[in-house]
Image (cartoon, rainbow, N blue to C red; front, side, top):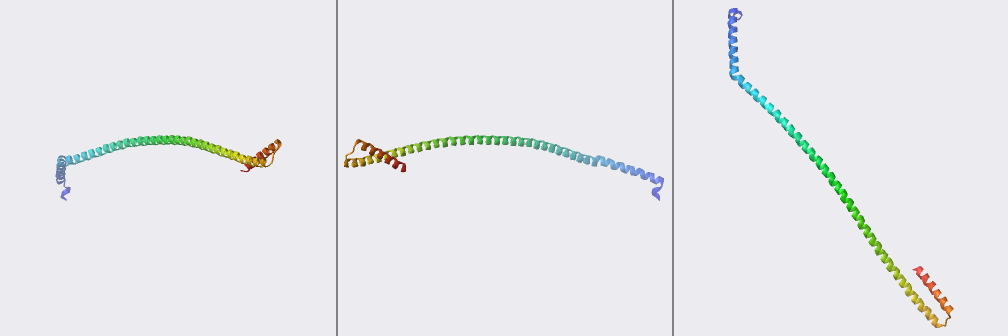
Length: 169
């Protein structure tokens, strides 16, 4: 077998090394720069992507902090609005109570006036009734002559009759 001949084997080894060296040189000269450039470009893109992701994360965190601050501000504002609304409602309730108290006083005053008017009417009616009774008594008195004692007794009877009639009404 000729491949295993030492003379042939050593020259084969030499040419293998020369071929391998030429291949390495060609790879180093033409292929490795492209491969290394591609690897460098890929590393640069990965680094830029990582930096962009970190910037995006930082921006997202900043926006989240802004959002949380706005939410807290909105919650405080809402709480203030609720407190103001409660105060307004309380004032409105107090105002309504004052109005209702004034209206109640007005109604009481009107009722008192009406009661006073009705009392006056009743007194006027009693006076009218008393006058009529007095006229009736006078008619009876004119039919016969009365003494002072009779006058007093008839006046007392008339007053008692008026009082009874008044109590019935």
